[in-house]
Image 1 (cartoon, helix red, strand yellow):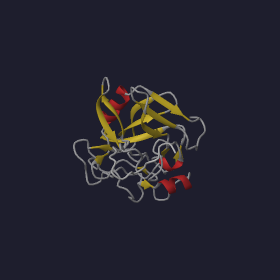
Image 2 (cartoon, one colour):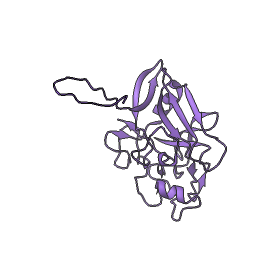
Image 3 (cartoon, helix red, strand yellow):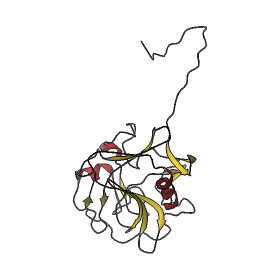
Length: 221
């Protein structure tokens, strides 16, 4: 059988195992490779992180929130079971500094070794990774199969961002799943916080109210 791993006594073999990491370049001409987590926070572990499916959508967070924080977080399961308003959705922003550009805070929901990206990092992703692939309809509200891929110079997919939609800042209601994607940064303005966001023909860095519910994709520290 082809590709069968076999051990033969008294024979030495070299086994090469490729552990795929996800990321993009933050510098021009394929420089400053930066690792990102392969899935959104709260996504289903163990599935193919490059497959556009419901299990890769993950949870949604208000800016500055911790995982599970009441009124400011919705799990993947709850997000996919309830497209309406969320009882107790908090419309008061978290204090400035809840997430930070300069250092990882106690509120940062990313696991050890990772943090919420700064908007400068997201802007570098946008500027230096122009080989972009889009899959899905980008018009059918509520679908899970729309996503954006960044590809490297060898045309290999290195990062997938599902079009997860958002939760509305005032009441937590779902909007535009399968049409747009919004990914928080740690960066804030006076009354808003910065995101990487994309649609069928655009990839932008824009600011939105802190109490919007957006996806989080962690970057290596």
